[in-house]
Structures are given as C-alpha cells and as structure tokens.
Length: 117
Image 1 (cartoon, rainbow, N blue to C red):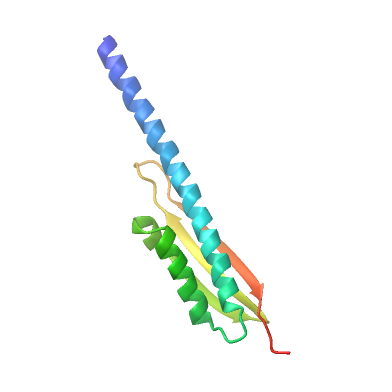
Image 2 (cartoon, one colour):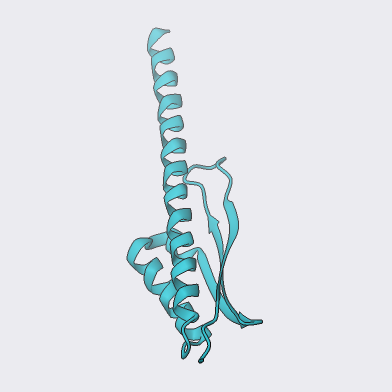
C-alpha cells in the first residue's frame, strides 16, 4: 500500500515539475519573440530598408535563439504602414504533456520609418 502511494506521489510530482519547466521555456520563448520583433522593426525602419529585410532580421534572431519545434511554430510578417514599420509575430507553443494547453499569442513591434532630410 505504501509503495503504491509512493509511486503515485512521485508520478504527480514529476508531472508538476514538467509543467513548470514547460512554463519557464514558454516564457523564454516569449522573450525571444519579443526581441526578434523589436530587432526586425528596427532593421526595417532604416531609410533604405524594406519589409523583406525586416522579416529576414526576425528570422535571423529566431534561428539564433529559438530553434526546434518552438521556433517552427512562429510566423513573422512585416509591413510598412503610415510611416511606421510594423513587425508582427504569431506564436503557438504546444504543451509538452497532454492536458497542458497550447499557448497562442501575437506580438507586434512598430518603429517610425526613417526619412531622408
């Protein structure tokens, strides 16, 4: 009887540990995406930059800091609108264990586009 309780308690504690580790990794991924969006918007705001350069910069940052399944779940688009460069990332981070929901969110970064004097 005590062995069964021990096994159940150990399994439950491991499940909680995995859920907490998943949460920490998701927070890291959110920070990486935030940095990628900000960097991309800054890169696209230069005088001679385009939306393609903005997207390329975002993909470079993501490739350097977040690879694997989490990195593939992120889509970044850039566009110039009304004198602003806007970088938008859509993210879907799947849970590691069945029952942990997928975390989806969108982050947007905007920078005023530089102009020639």
